[in-house]
Amino acid sequence: MTRRTPLSRTVRWVVLALFAVFFVFPLYAMADFSTRNLIQGGRTLAAWKNLVRDDQLYSAITISLALAAFTVVVMLAVLVPTMIWVRLRAPWAKGMVEFLCLLPLTIPALVVVVGLRGVYEWVTYFFGESTLTLTFVYVVLVLPYAYRSIDAALSAIDLQTLSEAARSLGAGWATTIARVVVPNIWSGILSAAFISIAVVLGEYTIASLSGYQNLQVVIVQIGKTDGTTSVAASLATLLFGFALLLLLSLFTRGHRRGPGTNHVAQATVVAPAPAPAPAPAPLATAQPGAAAS
Amino acid sequence: MARNGIDRLVREALPLVPFLAFVVIFLLIPTVTVVVSSVYDQGVFSLDRIHALFTDTALTALWKSVLLSGSTALIGAVLGAVLAALIVSSPPTSLFRRMVISLCSVLAQFGGVALAFAFLATIGLNGVLTVWAQDHFGWNLTGSGWLYSLTGLILVYTYFQIPLMVIVFLPALEGLREQWREAAVGLGATTWQYWRQVAIPLLTPAFLGSALLLFANAFAAYATAAALVSQGSPILPLLIRAALTSEVVLGQAGFAYALALEMIVVVAVVMVAYTALVRRTARWLQ
Image 1 (cartoon, rainbow over the protein chains, first blue to last red):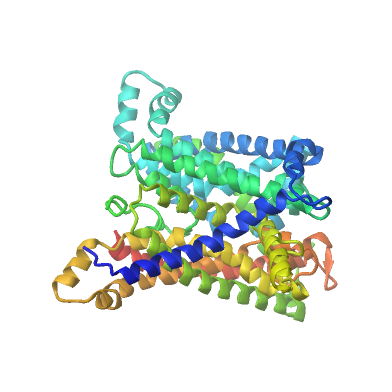
Image 2 (image 1 turned 45 degrees about the horizontal axis):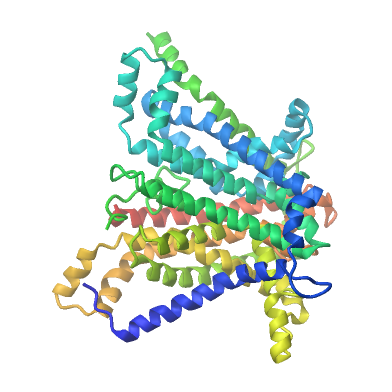
């Protein structure tokens, strides 16, 4: 339909190439910088080996991975039953749950951390002084992303019929959720989990300002004396996040059933658009047909 | 009868308690704490902390934050819209598109500290580009440490604002139906006329809404700036850091609360405008 002259084609490619240079060059520079041998010249993998050899960095990596795992487990345990319940038995609360889930996009993490001190005095009183207590606030932090993914998956199935069928065959609520609903919204759960992992691994604001040492805090700390190791660790987190999201996007291609399902990937990637009001950011979430065209 | 109704309500609401507890304790209480503590000092109502917002230091930080967010929102929105327009013509399932979207979403949402190091590795003191320009042309790219000033922040923020624009603007571009173009062309419009009189007017609310979102995003961003600028506090988020870590800034304890309140107010105003624009977009996009 569209007529493209050779000139406009050339312009397109030139502009695309300029964007590619702007975005890829800093990443290339990180790879180059982190493999440089500053003392003897030439190349070395010393900075990359530090990811496992440097005790402080290695323990920060394990802490952040553990935080990511805990956050995903708690988030799913809290959010999935709530969202299913709201759809089935308490539709009056749907607007409120959605509003609360998207609220963290409007209230900056920086504001939360300023007001968090009092709350965390109680948390450490009950759970002790551990970086893993960050799990609680991280669960809130990932709510918007997780909500969008799971909501898209739930919209794509006939939840009412499924659960009524399960219940009439004698299943309790726990069985219905675990054995009937969850297997049907697997793609949404997976993308909620992946995105939450990426958020937690990249989190700096809350950890640093409340005095905990997670991966990003340690990266900044090490950067003051050993720039190459910090650059290596930064590039590693970026590549890991990229791999997670690309994998997710490729995975959701194979799991397309109805017109609704292909929004799972879209809705999650598009997650930042916050809509504090009842309108669920139509810009970002569903627009049937548009994605397929 | 009434008892029955209450019973039902309790039974319906009970499973929501864990979720509500999380949100109340770890989101609402901290926010309310900020608002209350900015006007109550040890139980006594006082506007001292609010007054401190109008000192030179605080006003300068606010102004620089607005400048940073405004300029990167503008640059990000324009360039991001161009990039989105280039991407939208490739099919949604193509590997190229998936890779671009994944990269955009990593840079826009999860970059943080890593982006600061990306630019330190590129144009920092020993950065790859710095060394290269020095060796080949004898240029000094790092002159006067601009990377650690507002100019540097503008450059680094652009690196995550453009990808964010791509992500939030792409759905609006996809919402443009091919039939509308065909209808316009069928009625004798040129490509230019189609863009000028159909596409651009339709996309304007979405474009402005996305630009506002970018503004709020930059205004509240902390990690990148904090990792890049370790000394001093040129912008509002870094002034909050200073107020939090040193207890007394400007001779005003608890100043962080007032600054955080200022941030809430600015972001809230921007987001309300954003929501209004999104509603407008929704009218034709659905």
